[in-house]
Image 1 (cartoon, helix red, strand yellow):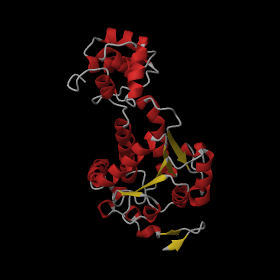
Image 2 (cartoon, one colour):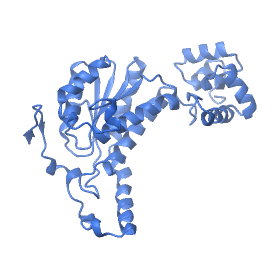
Image 3 (cartoon, helix red, strand yellow):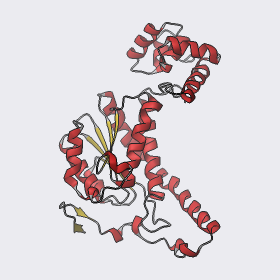
Image 4 (cartoon, one colour):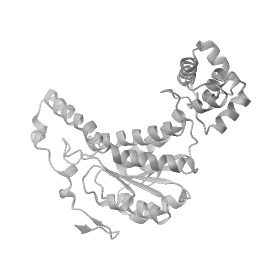
Length: 315
C-alpha cells in the first residue's frame, strides 16, 4: 500500500488485475487484425459472466436506489475519466427513456462537465474535489451516490463516497478489481473481476464494458421497480422527436390493443403523457381521472388499472 497526495491509502497499481499484462496478447502488436479481433471478442465474452457473479451486490444497490427514490432521493453517479463518462452517459439517458426530470439521475465527472470531452489531468487525484462537487448539487441523506472506478482506488471517488456517507447518503462502489480500496468506503460494494485488458491498463475496454452493464442494471431495474414500465414497455418515455413519437404510438397500441391511430389520438388527449394514455384506454377514463389513478398508485400503470376496478388479469 501507499498514500497518494490526498492522504488516501491505495494499492500499488501494478497489484491490480486490471493493470497487469494479458498473457494472451503479449504479441498484440504483430497480430493479424483477424487474430486481434478474435481474442478481443473472446475477452469481451468474459464480462457478462463476471457481472453475473456479483448480481446479489447489484440487487442490494438497486434496493437502495428504489428506497431513495421513494423518499424523493436522487441517483448520483460519481467517477473520473472513462468511469465518470459512463455515469454521465447513463444519467442523461434516463429522462428520454423513463420520463425523469434531469435532476433525478445525475452524473458527476472529475474535472467538471468539460472533462467528458477533454481529459482534465490530475482531477481524479483530488479526494476533496468530489465533496465540493457533491455539495454543489446539495447532496443530502435521501440520495444514493454510486462511485465508479475501474481500479477501485481513485482518490476523487473515494473522497466522494466518504463525503456522502458523512452526510448520511447511501453509497455504492463499482470497481473491476477484487478487494478494491474503495469497497470499504461504501455501503454496497460491487466488484466485477474483469482481469487484464488486451491492451495493458486500457480500462475503457473490458472494465468499461462491465461498468456500463452495471449502470444499465442499476438504472433500468430501479426505474422498473419505481413504476416506469408496464409489462416490458417504456410507458414513461418522452416523445420528443419523430422516432420517439412513433415509438410512443406503438407502445400504447401494444399495451392496450388499439391501433396506432387511436393510440396517437389518446396520447394527444393525454398532453403527450404515454403512461396516462395507457391508463385512459385500459381503465376507460379521461386524462384527469388517469392522472389521479396514477398518483394514487405511485405511478404504477398496473396498480392504477386495478384501482379503477379492473381485475389484475385485465391489467
